[in-house]
Amino acid sequence: MSFVDRHRLWSDEDRASAASMEKAISESGVEVIRAAFVDQHGCLRGKTVMADDITSLLGSGINMTSTLLLKDTSHKTVFPVWQSDAGFGEGRLTGAGDVVMVMDPGTFRVLPWAPDHGWVFCDLYHSDGTPLGLSSRGILRDALARLANSGYALVTGLEVEFHVFTVLDERLELSDAGQPGAPPKLGLIGQGYQYLSDDRYDELHEVFDAIRVNARKLGLPLRSLEIEFGPSQCEATFAPAGAMEHADNMIRFRALVKQVCRRMGLHATFMCRPRFDAEMASGWHLHQSLVDRETGQNLFMPQKKDETISPLARLWIAGLLAHARESCLFSTPTVNGYKRYRPHTLAPDRIQWGRDNKGAMIRALAGVDDSASRIENRIGEPAANPYLYIASQVLSGLDGIEQGQEPPQPVDNPYDSNAERLPNSLLEALGAFRESTFYRAQLGDEFVDYLATIKQAEWNRYHAQISEWEEREYSTLF
Image 1 (cartoon, rainbow, N blue to C red):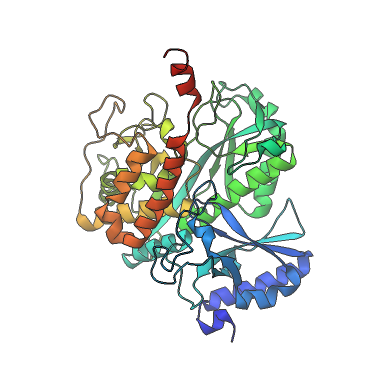
Image 2 (image 1 turned 90 degrees about the vertical axis):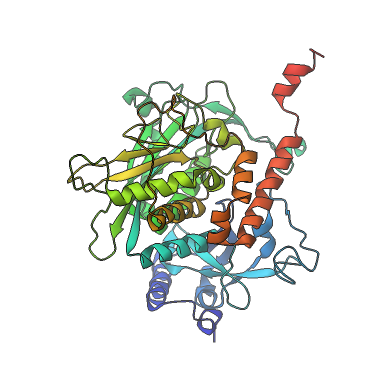
């Protein structure tokens, strides 16, 4: 029996998807398959396998080095894998041994920018067939199952900002190598500060056209492509879809933009605040509504004219606010992302909500008979792992419902309120997460300590570097 059969990993729907995948590979002329999983940082890692072997590989899975799950953002392994216990129990994830990638055949796509390549996402298992508890995709799947048990499904919408630059120098001299290596020297492709200007859009139309054509071919529900406020800054919005579908779509979109732009001699980045004087920070606004699993009714839509949003949505908002600080490690997982939380910048800096107010962390967009009633959480950065970010919303919102929490009154002046501040650094967010009794109860000590260890290593490397600011500030003064 195959690995999949022996451990009963697939449903009848998965088997039907596998048959469709094999047929699509045969009919499309695909020669290789990029089989990939999403790591702890929301980055794709995997192996490229020959399409001729797809029937065998679908059943057997693909061995994958376990240390890929134990690395920080510099790709350095931060756990003692050469000891008998790396921190996960005797013999677990030690010796750089393998875990098993099992393809999710429903995610298969033919890459439009490389049409002889197929692309499929994978889930991770131990060699004994048990799911890998550190898998971010698995964490979201489990959170959504809990939500479903309560009779709800989460519908999400994405607004994602990013930058696209021209490449002046790839920085590929031998001296540029490192871990991480030197970033390329970049130039602008647009001057910026003409938000939604048609002329600015026309300047970038070749980039937008390339993204649009490939996104449509990939099946992404792209709704709009827009000129954002900052130089070389763009935004994409997506039609509503299920939470897992949009988590997958976010991964696909980031890879699409970076790979398509690279083929055009450009550099795309979802880094929150690129380093140049006139930059504007990029955010990821996550729209959310709960629907009844049986009827599909939008449960965030108010029923009374004097309601800002439905009573259920108020409970959901209360949960998001109650756990906002400890959830920042999911929504804003980089050192750079906390430099976005500044007043009067259309970004939040406090834990609060408001009616259609873009300065508040949570923006309520709802009305009687408005089937699109929803909330928008403006806290996230585009570099966030979508599975962990969305899972944090599910777990926090569901806790608000289960505990019957009520939010404070909505704010009208978000940058002048006395609401609690968001963390001002990754270190502060890391402390809130590490001390969180909520996430230890929801996700377990092992996962909390695992992610905290990885992010602490990232912070430690950042804190050890001497910045240009320090050099300018002190080298001639003292």
